[in-house]
Length: 364
Image (cartoon, rainbow, N blue to C red; front, top):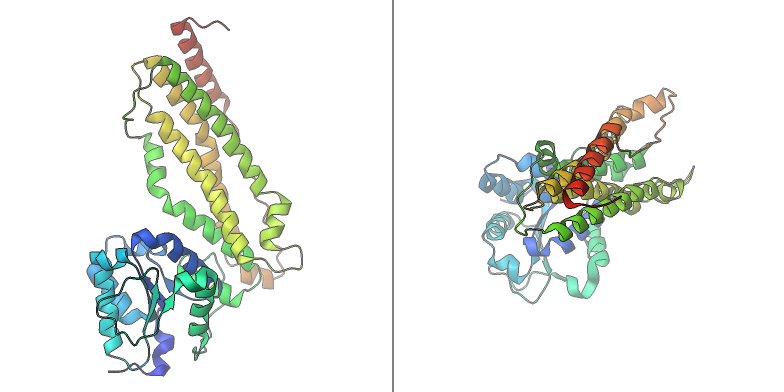
């Protein structure tokens, strides 16, 4: 039974992408570019919370068989070999058999041939057109005969890929900040398991046993990395960096730069989490050295808390932003991140370092 054209507006997604994990880099690049055009894309990495606890066989069947206007299959040797991609492909092919209009949009990443895909179906070869042109072609496909849907203006930080697409399509007042904070929150959420390990002060034991000389070098290298990481966040919050993303007063922002700026801030957050993990996973027979490493790990406590606090405050500040702007309220977003080491944390490290020096006969 074919799907009536009048029903296209009822789809939850404009398109669903199916791909092998080995091809994630190119697929995510295409997805982010398509989302900038306002498309609602089912991309599994954006839906982790929604998929959590679901029966994925049934969940993915519903996505690829019913909930998307098009399915884009990224065909490669890895795609053909995977069991899960085979399940997604079968659901998409079942849907394609039930409607007269095109549904499957094949994209070739190499010379592999997809079993069951009719040889007369037109495809795009990503090796020939490149990522940028491929994203443009997807957007053109979605624009052709697209249904006119009047959706409400976003009035809070987007929480799903669909809401991000709607925001980029309509671009209401302050959309740049809504997009930025959404990307920040999404990035922080994706690292929540890492943060929970950090809260528990958990880290896997290193398979490398460090001796005294290597251990001290390890500590010094992590101190230098902490300083560099902390300094990098200041560059990301300069007026020049923000104007490039959000636009100067009276100018529109650049979605690609906004996503990139958010990615870099989240990258600093991830590096700080990784530093704590590295320090706590250090393995040595020297107890004084391990106490010193643990004391140093606490240097990142305040910066990590500061980043999480600022993102939460920005989210709250943008709640009902459209209504507040209409009421004449001025929305001020001037995030400040101050990284500092509390006195008690510094003292704990100093005491541990003094104990280490005494144990090894170091002179000041």
